[in-house]
Length: 251
Length: 253
Image (cartoon, rainbow over all chains, first blue to last red; front, side, top):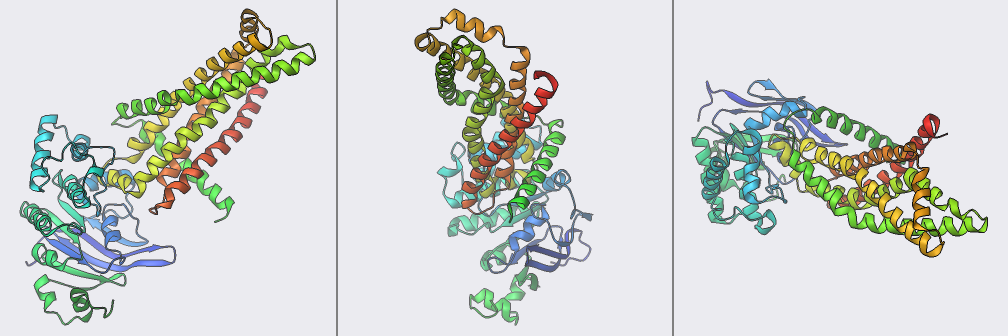
């Protein structure tokens, strides 16, 4: 898909994150276009999740800029980030569900906080989300009664329930069985068709290929390869080939 | 990290948290139901432990003062001494110490568990404020419940010290009651009661600060819970000294 003439929704410029003496991200630059799905791949611990979390203000960068719809949000305060978080959703890796609430109340949380919908409308929306993610009948269960994969799917459902413009998925298919992996991919594709723009952090190249328009390989704090999934497969980039084939190489 | 550095970090962190509470307290939405839940958790659920502590305090005070004063022929001053000690110091401070353990530890463990399981981040990511949903209801719940638990503690201590005086010191219930309340000045009561609001705030703010600053490591929960109880206990002792000094300068001398 050509990006010419498309609006840039997220732009990361010269982005650095360090914890103490340890530099995690070292000068990342990329743009995310409207309607696009970008897969961020890379070994564990290279800072993929930190990059996603920074976009919704859950981590602070050491240097660099983050633009969301041309607005510099890098130094936004917590209250200023609230409006950003209404249009940029972050689906946590482990679901991050509220343990004291049922699945229903977890899903209702953002709707009750940010909309004026009555309970019957909220119930309809929740039922539909749960059906879409193969979770019907779980409404009254508590997160600790669900498997890890189910918690992850409820977490994704909660983050997209407000129909955000941009969705950041943190390893949405890790730990899911093949059927639910496919189900999750279909849901991401459905949301893209509805106009959502997304970034997908994943180790699963097959999912990246099925769902994403572009793939970026993160290594040693920087993006070392990028392109369409089918092009990257044919690439002569050794680091990328090592990552895809699961051989040690530069890793 | 040195103790001085940790202490300065704690003072700075608590000051920022206090500022944030003050700013967000006055803006919508108000989570009344969450505050009422906390009043139930902190206030109602703490009555058994406060009952036991207050009863034993009443018994011990009566025996200690009664038998000591009896040696000097001053047994009849026992009710007066007990009432001053109870209202000014013992009920507020004992109640605060007991609740720093029960309520403070529970709050810190709960909040820090939410932190390590990313529930606090989830609140933020969903466009809500953890200060509003987590911190303010606990601080308000604490400040609104603990003074009443202290009053409850005073009442129970009175009952048990009176019973001990009747059965062990041969002071009649009428005599004990009239001497216990007769010379309790409003200032005695107010000096102790005012302290309870400060202690309640210190318990809650310390628990919330340490809970919110827990690290993602699992051992972080135990560590911050210990730190919260130790810090709030030290702050209770220090603030008790400062407030007593101020009350003496202003009224009690």
